[in-house]
Length: 96
Image (cartoon, rainbow, N blue to C red):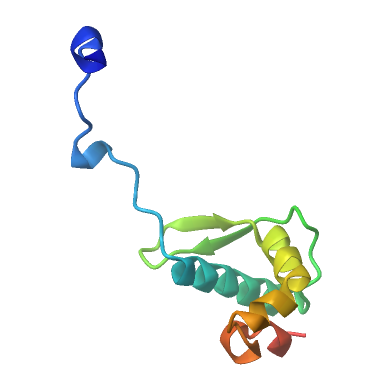
């Protein structure tokens, strides 16, 4: 009823927002940003508000809120391990 009153139409495929990636894709993106930061800075002790710009698979630049992700990952390390995200899976201890 509202669409007939306001004259709204459903958005086409070109107007739809991009699909959100899977949790594994987001984890891989954050891990790639952490590797990039570590290669440049030599450590992973950036501020919580740090945003890392990385090049995506298609060449576009992606901003990753790396500082918050690192902080949250460190705080939740025990829980992540209990869920099956062991050191071999998330590989942060390899950075230092």
